[in-house]
Length: 275
Ligand SMILES: [Zn+2]
Image (cartoon, rainbow, N blue to C red; front, side):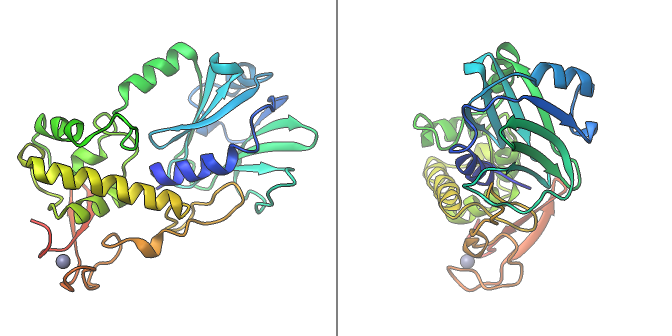
């Protein structure tokens, strides 16, 4: 499932293409990716101009008409935004188009989603402000220091891995990068959040930012489906140190990496390095 780095990599590949284009017409092929009736969505979106391409948490956010409204795309498991007709990129044809935004001069933007767990929403400025307020801070933002992380952890008794996955506590972190950050910080993913020491919070803060930044630099992690706007998979998978490496030697100490399941999700860790 795409997390912060994958959404960010996709945003960076779309940003040079989309601003300035208006949605001439919208075709709804699979209304189940919408939260409102297709007709309502088409009416709300048609005629709007994309003025900015950004990201909040794991969502791709197209600012419309300089902030009057937003198109918020949650990629779910297999969602992708595919720009068609742009000479700069040549992505493969979408296989499961759900929405098609016609941009004029033969160009369009397709929301493609094989499994359709993703969701595309039109939000007014007020609705967007309310939505973004409910999300936790961005871990890569300048103002998010280790003290903010430590403070947040102090207020919760949940296992630290679960805390990291909670979008209201911190935005954009999913299962892959939560495991990777705990490994870098040498913190066991099941440790109670409020028992993380200052020293550990510093390491977790640094580890989290490192794994997210490195993943963005390498175009995100593709386990199966994720592609950027050119149809390119991410190159970060080989850089993962614990996630998906059950039984393989720990990158630091050679102890076999363990997979444990709690809260219905897997976590990967080194039983010697992380306590
Ligand atoms: Zn180890």
